[in-house]
Image (cartoon, rainbow, N blue to C red; front, side, top):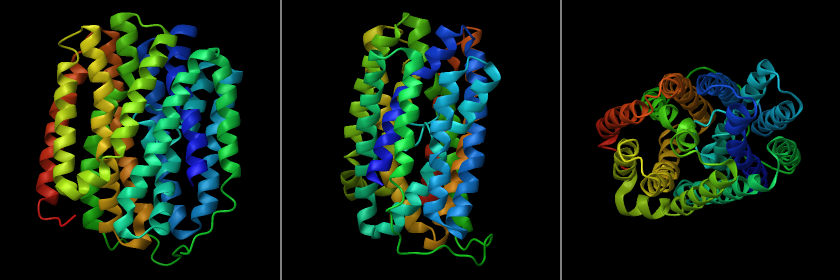
Length: 376
């Protein structure tokens, strides 16, 4: 699983940098077009994630993961070989190029994320899961950051050929994986943990909406506001990725020190404050500080959240729970992406950040309301 994640993260890091430049700079499309592509990719990833989550629980986690793994290389090959806008839409949808999540959390190729996490749940004990989630995300995020840096040494188009080869290699390492639990072929649609899944689904929906408002447009923000070149932006993305990577290692400490709920409130609260400040002070050093800090604060408690969810949900329903959570998160993020794409097009680039602050404020309140009595 580690090797699988590393190959895909390296590909994802390169694609995350190269794709917006491919659309905005090389092919001269508008930010609204980029927003529509991200939206289509987000919805497709949500559908794939839900489908794969169900298949993982009721059929086979390994075979389902293999099915998900081949979508990213297909996507990269399409982008490499065509300038056709329709095919670029198809490629983004297959590869999950939605930019609605960190690369460590499945922001590119995200349809495979629920299955990976379900497999980790199978292979670990509850008391170890936060550590293993954070370790795997850390390694993936480090490699993704290196992928972002590597993008500066390749032509924009060649990046996608290399990403296709690397992500194809990831599919080849799945075969040796052995799982101790078999899929549950009974009660395919009955969920014992429906209430818990519902709580995580609602908070996940607001997480997705907020992420869709800002995450896909952080790089365009620097392109529009400061006219930053692709090679320089690759350096900044690398630094941001490295900081976010090491922030993930704090997850086990956060869980021990603050618990699930307070970890979410503290990290997401600080990140929300920075998001609101970003469009107000359009000074490059200030914007870079926020760009370096926001992803770290957003992902820092992600392993704690994932561990809490897998602990609270019945073990035979983890794949479906993660799939349902992802589909609502990504569909709502697509709405945020559409809104922000239009706002950027009409030069109202501050409004998405302020809306992000309001949505995250509601989300933090719901986390408190739903999980204040949780022992996690």
